[in-house]
Structures are given as structure tokens and as C-alpha cells.
Amino acid sequence: MLEIQNLSVDYKGNCVLSNVSFLVPMGQLVGIIGPNGAGKSTLVEAILNLVPVTQGVVRFKGMPLKRQLLQTAYVPQRSRVDWDYPVTVWNVVMMAQTVQTGLFKGFSQWARQQTRTALERVDMYDLRDRPIGELSGGQQQRVFLARALAKEAELLIFDEPFTAVDRKTEDIIFDIFQELRAEGKTLLVINHDLGDSLAIYDQLLLLNKHLIAQGNRREVVTSDNLERAYGRGLARVFA
Amino acid sequence: MLDWIIEPLSLSFMQRALMLGILLGILCAIVGSYMIVQQMGMLAHAISHSVMAGLPIAYVVGVALSIGALVAGVISALVLYLIESRSRVKTDAAMALILTSFVAIGVVLVSILPGANRIDLVHILFGNILGVTMTEVWWSLAVTVVGIILVRLFFKELLFYTFDPKGAQASGMPVHWYNASLITAMTVTIVVCLPTVGALLVVALLVAPAATAYLLVKELHQIMWVGSIIGALSSIVGMYLSYYLDAPSGASIVLVSFCFFCLAFLFSPSEGLLVDLWTQRQRSHLTDADEVDQTLVMQRLNSPERKF
Image (cartoon, rainbow over all chains, first blue to last red; front, side):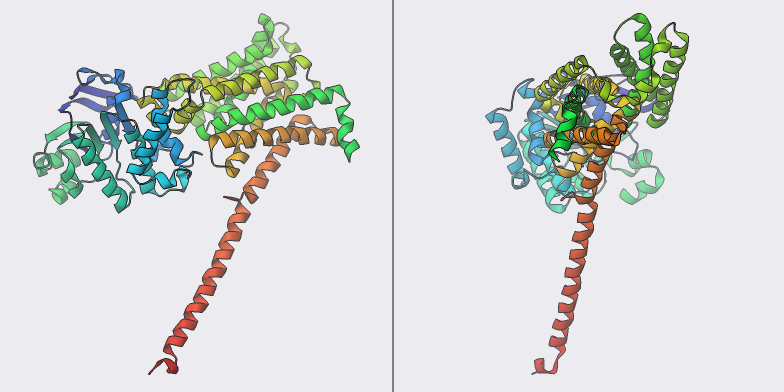
């Protein structure tokens, strides 16, 4: 169980996130939706302790999450990544093994095998020696997905994984999300659009600085809720 | 030709200068590689000038000038971080403010602290590699060797942190320590280079060889290797130029390293400007040829012989 209680974040005096609380049972695929600037990225960053929180508790399996970071995998938004960085596909996925391997040691044979399996699973093993800057948007996203898989985490967090990806990548990501859920992993996914892609989630969180609604698609995507999150215009289009 | 190369080597000050130049070329390229990927060039520039505030204080207190420079450099980075994180003032404005204020502190203290006016500010600003002592060469060797060992030991952690700081932090890595270590390493490198090229030009030694290598190869460790070779070569060629043209040594080294960068910018096989233009030209020739073929095909298709 992932428990979030009263999570609040201030940034330079402005409230970005206010008293967000929710529960996610293990083995669920959860979508986080909301307008631009609603604090979706801040929410996952606060869960992972990447931004200072003003108050709140984050527990995973009954323990503070920040003490079990080896159990979590995080895929940042693609705009946060420097795609000109001089690094190959293989070495990006190897990064998943950095903390487990420990200081002053080289990667083990097992770590290499994990990397290989993860790259094969997203159909990127053949491109393992390519610099990441020479890949398409979809291929880049699959490399980060492979890095998350290679970590064998229990809680996986994705920030807008479907931005700028091709159809093949979208299918691969969908399939892998289903497989991970079947393995009992918990997934939090920030989803940018409100279309049919929402059908894959077990539950949705609708956010705009505070939690507006939580539940299945039918309960969350209502004209009332959307109006509260997005304002009147958009709500009419999607409801 | 051989005489031309050997003659300066018989002079002991040239021997020392060349040894130091090669060592600093290697050290700067390694530290500079992290600066390029972390986009810390302007920070290095700010720190390189801020070190001046520490010199008169160290002189009066009676510790080595380099210690004073190091402390002032690190303090300037901390103040910068404080302004950036606790106010709405953006990075470039904060850097301009800190850079100039720390230089001003240095200039004021040199004239008001008793005895500090014996510090030669021109020497600090421009350096003089031909005046280095053997002790400075040994110090540079020690710093370079320690630098290489540390990079080797922490390479995988630094790769992860510099590529994806948020991902590294989410994995539980102590990213603030890695950030502080990189800034300290950069400041130490700047301080070691001060006697050679001076505060005004030191950033060129850090940035140019690594940036040149960045245009030529595709992985961080390769950038370090190629950058080291380019850095050492720039020092050697620059020193010979300075010897024969009687030009200032620091500026000569910087100009040679800039020439190497221009060569890579124009001729790099993967992204050189001229290579790019050449490939585009080739491609447009091909397209033209394709179009001609197309018209021919169309003519053939429409010709009376085809109509049965």
C-alpha cells in the first residue's frame, strides 16, 4: 500500500500542492491527470522526496518511502533530460544498477544481464551502442522505460511517458504497464491527455493544486470534476 | 626544424613550464568534461574571478595564497546558490553580481589591509607560466593524479548524477555531495591554474579542450581522453608560440586551444559545419538526379511506344 497523507509543497512562498492525501493498494496502475501547472510533477517529486515538502507523510508498505528508494524507479519528464549528453543507450540503462552495485565497484555480470534483459524487453538491445541523442523520441522513452525495468522496483513512477512517442512505443509501454501490474507492482503515471488512453488505469487522481477527485474513470471524469479542475471550456469538450 | 623544437627545452624555465602545461591540460580537460555536460561554464567564470577576494586575506593571515583563493571560490559558489534558491533573481544576474562584488572585495582589501599591496594583481589576472617554480609543478602533479583517481573511483556515480540528477536523487544518491564535490574540484583546478594563465583566462583551459572533444566523440570517458590530449597539445604549442613570438604565454595557450575548437567545429566528421554543408550538397545533387530520372520515367511512360 502506498499512503500519502496531507502532502503540501510551497515554492518561494507560492502554494504548489496543498494537503493531498490518497491511498493506492499494491498492484494498481494509477493515472494522475490535471491541467498544466496543477502540480502533477511536483506531486511525484514530493512523493520521491525530490523537492522540500512543507508537511505530509509518504509511506510504502507501512514504512517511510525515502528509506526504501531502492524499491522505486522514476522516469522523469522528457523535457527534463539533456538529450545531447554524451552517453550510450547501454550506459543509461546501466545507471539503474549504480546504487545497488555500491561505491568503488564495477558492475557485476548479473547487473549486465539485467540491463540486457530490460533492453530486449523494450526492443532496444540492437541499438545499445547508439548515443541517446541519435534516437527518436519514442526510442528515447523506451530506453528510460528499460532503465526503470532493470531496477526491478516495486513502485514505478512515470512523468508523462506518452509525450512525443510513436505508435509502436505507445503499444510497448501499454503492454509493459499491464505486465508490471500483473506482477503485483504499483505504478503511478502522469497522463497528459484526457482521451481513451485513460481506460487502462485502475484508478485516476484528478489534481489541481489539491486532489479534486479519486476513483475509476467514470467517477473522476465527470463534467463537474473537470470544470473544477480545468474551468468551464475544456470540461464541456471532454465530459 | 629539430633545433627549433629542442632549443627551448634546454632552458630550465621552459622545461618546468612545459611539464606544468601538460599536467594542467590533462587536469582541465577531465574537470572541464563535467563542466560541459553540467553547463557550469559561467559558474566557473564567476568562481575564477571571485577567488581574488581571498588572496589579500590569506596574505595578511599568513597562509598560502592558494588556500585563500580556494576558500573565496567556494564561498562565492555558496552565496550564489543562496541567492538563486532563496530569491527570484535569475542565475545570470546573480553570477554577474557575485563575480564583480568579489573582485571588488579583492581590490579594496589589497589596498587597505596592511602589507597586502605587495600582491601583484596583474600577475593574478594574467598569470605567467614561465615563472613557475618546481614546487608548483609537483603540486599540480599531485592534484592531477588525485583528480584522475577520484574520477576513476566515482565515474559511474558521477555519470548518473550529471546525466539525470533527479533520477540519481530518486535512487537515494547523496546528490548534494556530488554537486558540492564537482564545484570544489572545479575551484581547486582554477586555483592550480591561476599562476599559469591567470584569473581572466583560466576558464578557457577548462572549457576549450573539453568542448572540442565534445564535438568529436560520443561518450564522456572518450571526451576526457581526447580532451586531455588536446589540452596538453594546446599547452605545448602555445608555449612554443609564446617563446618564439615573445607573446604572453597564457594568452597564447588559450588561442591555440581556441584554434583546435574551430578546427573541430568546422571539420568534425559527425557534426562539423563544413562536413554538414558538404553532405547537404551531396544530398541535393542526388535529389536533383532523382528528379531527372523521374521525368525520364514519366516521358517513357507517356511515349507513343508504350501505348499498345
